[in-house]
Image (cartoon, rainbow, N blue to C red; front, side, top):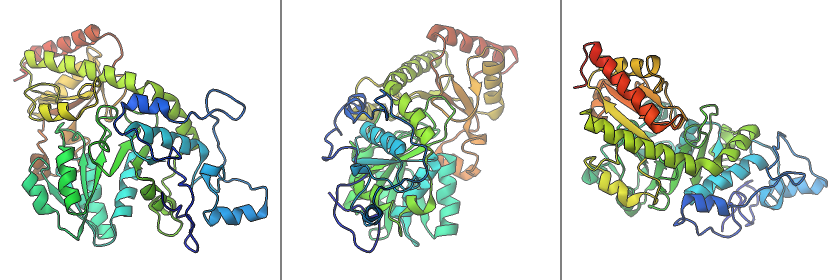
Length: 438
């Protein structure tokens, strides 16, 4: 299956350390919940049903010769040997196996944040002088990384395109120079759905790797099944679910993840975006109910979007038939998970958006004004002045981000009807203030 790539002097082919199965997994077509349930269950040190937290930074050996074999790549985590937690930690490795199972990839590596996952994988795939083609509508932090930081620090440049325009994507990819096509499965914040099978076909025809950020749609979409080479996540969001943990993940072939652990050339090993074992334990305990949570997020988002549309609001949600990507998304989603837990309301101006959010939080308690997503309470933010504020006016216009665009991550606290009545009450409060919804 490959090499461990632990050290450069003499690498010997051994069992890959980060694959979650000793055989190449055949779960890409499985339901993500089923795939997670068939992943290896790690018991605790004393037989506990929950795994133990391995809080050690460094690990001992019983024989002096063992350490040399570990550094030579002859012994590793798959055989129960660990060196140092920046390299591999048993608790973090277990979470990585679970995330890989959910995404249907051979391996995964969990990081300290979503941005750590994105930046390290891009720096691993692109050398100085490298080139990325990326969607013009991305999370503001990712856009800033590609547009400002990587060109300045690494001499890696990016061409931003409307990935719905196939000809524009083809033209932007320079065969022999472009390393990565980078997209979000569902764009932040405009909820544009990427045609992953078609984009992957175009990229692969030109020898380009496809990296997909699936933070908005875990369980709902499986980018690896649709052709993506690497899937990245901010585990902070839906996978955590509690708005109390910062974490990320890179999912893909074991050969890639192992190359990122190389002592001399690996971005994970050398940049050190290490996840704390206690964080990994917390996240691992939340994964079994991720499927249930996602289904309820999506169910409520669909109901609210449908009702908001009937009220005459300008609502954006891929589950609505009039959404331009509705048919596409329906063809790609995993069955019974819905169309995502995020919807957008375009109030046209920032003033109207702020008025509505103020009433929703401070008058009726429908939701909370805060960035991020995937929380059990509904989170709301005006994207143009918050999570997309890194983009200038021209870039926002190109991405389709209206000044009054409210991104809502729909929660599941309370009953659906209770929360809906709170929304209607807030909308009535806007009218009383003299601001119409249109």
